[in-house]
Image (cartoon, rainbow, N blue to C red; front, side):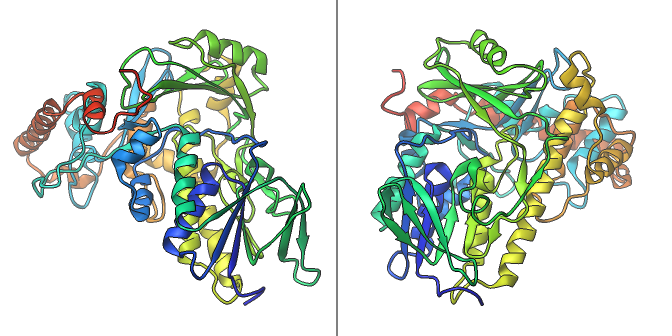
Amino acid sequence: MAGPVIRNIVIVGGGTAGWMAAAALSKVMGTQRYSITLIESDMIGTVGVGEATIPIIQLFNSVLGIDENEFVRETNATFKLGIEFRDWGRIGHRYLHPFGLMGVDAGGINFSHYWLRWVKAGGDPDNLKFSAEAQAALAGRFMRTPEAKPANLPKINYAFHFDASLYGAYLRRYAEKRGVVRTEGQVTSVAQDPQSGFITSVTLKDGREVRGDFFIDCSGFRGLLIEETLHAGYDDWSRWLPVNRAAAMPCARVEEPVPLTRSTAREAGWQWRIALQNRTGNGYVFCNDFIGEDEAATLLTQRLDGAALADPRILKFVTGQRKASWVKNCLALGLSSGFLEPLESTSIHMVQVGISKLLAMFPKNGVDPLMVARFNREMSQDYASIRDFIIAHYKVTEREDTPFWAYCKNMSVPDSLADRLELFKSRGEVFVENHELFKEVNWFAILYGQGIMPDDYHPMADVVAEDELKLRLSAIRGGIVERVRGMPTHQDFIERNCASATAPA
């Protein structure tokens, strides 16, 4: 063990990452044995990307004991059943990456292999007809899975769109009720033990000193502690993920919110559209080597489907991750740890992953180097697997109509991704490790959606007789149609259960 016994935890930076950490630590570790101090300044704005999430956030909310309807009301949230991609594989084409299963759990192999066999025999090539989440999203419908559902009925998988600033404020109230102390101020210097290099305190602009035994860096891209003080280093992945800017701005709501994040490929990147209860969030993620900031902001403004509610705000970033997210007695979360752009809504997820690993490996009588090494190794694996998944969106395309897309289509990719693309093209498989966020069903949705039709499928899919296969597929399809037909509209569900006070009447 190294360093002092952990009693005083200091979180530097608020926003989504800081208050998620404070809320989780106050709930799981408590504030009777530990003091938890969060330092943030009202003078420093938060980045605010991350209004879209993935289903695993329900686990985080469950650990905190949060009432979901209250959370949705307080954050102007809507529900999300997946992501719609427009113009990615080719202009004029769209596909969905829905949450949940495609078809049913077939046992032994993925359902997609049975579906591929059917398609190659002349069946309908629309894979979305076998996803309840996709069909509900396309119909603008939503409901939670009833608690008394039949045992063989798959649950409806969903996440949320929410106002990130309201989410941070919601978690702040939660954490402060449980004893977390918020300190207003800007950190101007960091003190380290001269022998060990461990951080001992931070000094604020007004001269106050905040001492701690363990520090969590949530200072954003800057990495005030993990990088500027401890020099963790950074792995730059921009050769594979070249986007490095985002112009973001809200606009007025002009229609009932859809339960989908929309991603539209543009000339030098892509544009997001996220419908909240009271407004619509928009952004143009781009690479400034191919388009200027002013032009990107102008194009985003012109493409809004409602009146602009603010001027475009430009965010700058470099895709990649810290070489180590935990150094000595400092652990980085959120943008301080790395950034993989918001294409698959994984930013908040990676905060959650870091928090869960910290809780599992929480130091007691000082920092254990073995735990530090394990944490860093696992975080690197998680980042790399998500990195490859996102790169595939850019690489697997027919587009070469702009310099940006020509670069993406022809760029080299990591060997780990190249092997997966080759295997998928050969027989529709993508082998995934247990720790990976995106499973075979996710890879299938993206690669098939982007335009790869596998040459073959797993031989086990040939075991079922042809008539039996058709009956099974027909039954699955019929069940999905009937299930979606029984759902209320997304808007009706919100109005009945969790309407925000600020949403239009």
